[in-house]
Structure formats: structure tokens, C-alpha cells
Amino acid sequence: MQGKSLGELAEYVGGRVCGNADVLIRSASTLGRAEAGDISFLTNRKYDKQLRTTKASAVIVGKETPSASVPLLIAEDPYYAFMQIMVLLHGHRKHKKVGISSRSSISDSAKVGAECHIYDFATIADDARIGDGCIVYPGVYIGQGVQLGNDSIIYPNVTIYDGCKIGNRVIINANSAIGEDGFGYATHKGLHHKIPQIGTVIIEDDVEIGACCGIERGTLGDTVIGQGSKLGDLIAIGHGTKIGAHSLLVAQVGVAGSTTLGHHCIIGGQVGIVGHINIGNNVTIAAKAGVINNIPDGKVVLGAPAIEANQGRRAYGMIQYLPEMRQSIRDLENRIEAFGSPAAPDIEAAAEQ
Image (tube, rainbow, N blue to C red):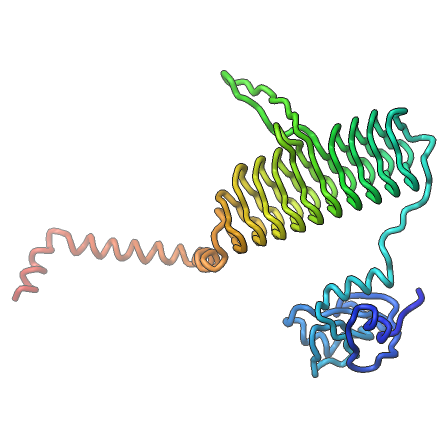
């Protein structure tokens, strides 16, 4: 791989070099695993000590660090600069240009844009519209009337049900299902009767959906994934839910139906969110939390049930002491009971004397 000098990289990301600007960088790695020719980054100060021991040829940091044993690239946002350098050095995944495979199945009424690549055994149903520059991998099913924007990538075995609308530059990873029926049933005399789900799913521009996700269509309205949001693997989004722009949902999150999340929310792994609540903008929910109430803008919550983070840390920090506290309470109860026994009048008399 042809490398770049540290000085060239600094110019590319709008940073500056502290040390030898001529050092050659060919790849990127973590501080602990880096070798000569690698560049790494430091964003968490608890790893400061590794600046003295890393074998990296350079490290991206936010400010000069006297303890560093290697040249530094000083950047305003080290992690963003690292991303830019990763793209420059390695690029994103390349997709084989296959054109329209003869072993794909494309309806006569479907329309496929220019420069698309439709792989073997992909199926595109009636009246679907595929934008320019899309990649559709083997085993994909794109249902009737689906609209797929430009430059989108649909990985193997994805199913996009009828009528869904997918924006530009959307990535949907393998085995995800978009627009399946919502979990809606009317229970009458012990039987569960399926409710038709007549809404759809709208995925806006620049969204990425992880592998094995399920995005349910709305019962009456639409389920919406906002622009620029990123969903990890094994995520379930209930019918009629609205996810705001530029939110991050980590793997195994479950959001029940008709819930609204604001923009720039961060939802940790394995969080469960009940239906019919509103979560504000810029909310952070810690991993494994259980959310059962509305959350205002800007809050950080944790725990099950989820509560404000500072309160939660104190409350959940006491759990380890509960057995001792229980025993102390029992001891106090025993002492109080003894104080109130038949011998108590003698004690009172003694006190009066």
C-alpha cells in the first residue's frame, strides 16, 4: 500500500504536526497493536500511558502531550481526523461491477436506474423504482412499489416489503427486513386477531441499518428512520415509531410501537423502550436500560426502570450494600421490640428515678 507522510495527512485533516512530519504512514491501528508505519489516535485520557510505549509511527491527539514518544498529529477532533485518514488510506468496501445479472428477476414494470449492479437471484417486484448507482446483492427481495434512492447498498438476503421508501445513500446490511407487519392484534374472547398494517416504512437519506434488524411498517401512519441515523445489528423498531435525525442505536435495542425519539439520541446496547412515549432531542440512554416514561431533551438516563444518571449511579451503587442494610434494620427492629417488651415498665421506672 502506498503511504502518506504525516505532514500530508495533517494537511488533509486540517491539523498540525508535532515532531517529524516526514514519517511515512501506510495503515492505522490501536495504540496497543500498532506497528511501524501505523497511525493511531488518543481520545480517552486513561490511555495516556500508552503514548510512551506504543510502536505506532504517529498518534492523532487533541493537544500536545509531552510524554509522547512518537510524532503527534494535533487535530481539533482526533477521532474524526482518524476516520478521515482511514478513508484516505483504505477506502470503503469495493463492490464488484456485475451490471444486471441474467439470473436476477426484475419485473417488466420495475425501473432500474443507471450504473446499478443487480446480483444473482435478486428479485425486484412490480412497479419498484431503483435509483442510480445502487448495489443489490444476491437474495435480496424488493417488493412491489418500493422506492430506493440513489447510491444505496442492499446486502444479501435483505427483504424490503411493498411500498417502503428508502432514501439516497442508504446501507441495509444482510438479513434485515424492512416493512414487515407490525405486532398488532386485537384480543377477543381469548383469541388474537391480526390487525392490518396499512402504513409503510420511510428510511431517509444516509441511514445505515445493521444486520438482522426488523423495521415494522406502521399500523395507520408510517414508521420513520430519520436522516443520518445509524442502527446496529439485531434491532427491532415497532410500528409507527419515529427515530429522529442523526441518532445512534447500538445493537439489540428494542423500541415498541408509536414511540418518538428526537434527533441526535444515543441508545446503548440492549435498551428496551416501551411504546407510546416521547424521548427528546440529544438524549443518552445507557446500555440495558428499561425506559417506561417520557424523557426530556438533553437527559442522560440509566437503569431499569431508567432514571437520571446521577441519581441512578447513587441508587444502583447501593445495591451491593443491601444485605448489610437489611441485617442492620433487623437488628434495630429486634432492639425496638425488646425495648417494648413486658420488662419495659421497669426500664421506664428506672429512668424516672
